[in-house]
Length: 356
Image (cartoon, rainbow, N blue to C red; front, side, top):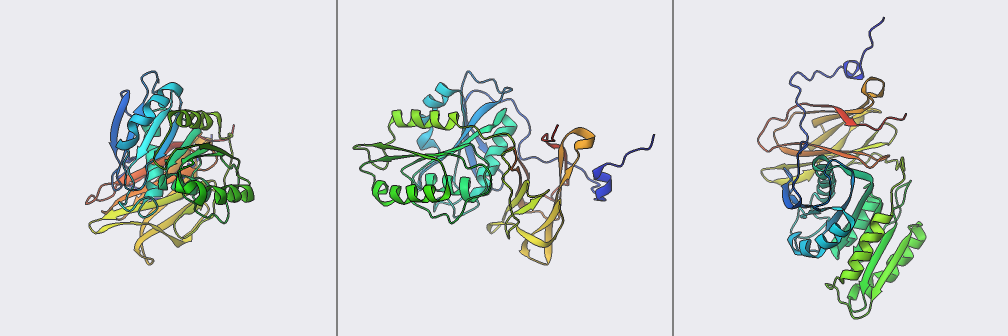
């Protein structure tokens, strides 16, 4: 019998010091609230209802706080409804005190989902994103403009952000809550209705008389949870991304790769070098001629029914490399601590998403 050569050997990547380096390894998670640090980013608050079996897939709801606020301000409001629906909650802390969209927030949200997936079994067809005020606007910006593969969106008192276009493929439905006394009720809601109508995004509106911007009625929250969990992202929904300055798209646009980094002076977003191939690409941090990282996604389906992820970085800055399977919604993140020489990564079990 002629021996087969694996994609890893064919790739010719000399990774002598092989070390799998996911941001979070599989762990047993206790019920209730816990705070999880994300190296090089910030943290998120994770809630696991008492009746959830961490080994059985559960829905995940990512909730973005309002500008100038924090996850702790929302914990008491959300846990009761999470218990009612047996849903996992993940509440990230924005990377900039100025609010969402001013730092490495997309990398933060993606890393939050990946970390939650590694801690508790998550159903990728039921990953929703919600947000209050500026967090709500950033939630829909990520869902429709940032190629975040979520099943539904729920916003509360969100301002208006214009989107010229939306990603191809599945468009998650959005539910919008506004109190009649919220200034955004008049300033944002009519424009958002026009926007979703023009873009073909399914939407619902919940308007409550007498409620202000920071009033979050329990009934509206409960209905919002129900709305999110009723929506399921179809299997193989298949958003196809396009490579840009800040994201690399490989394997026919099925996998999206982004990199965020933090050094002693602050943070930034990795940039995609011009040299790339169907399954791999290079990222630079400071100089387009000084490449910092090589990242590959390889089809290992004929060997172990998985797509593989390989990362080789020549740096000692903290980084978060995020690989998203846009067909299934599964996200993997790989990281390095500041001041540590980055280890090589060979994850041969990254994505069990081969076609049968």
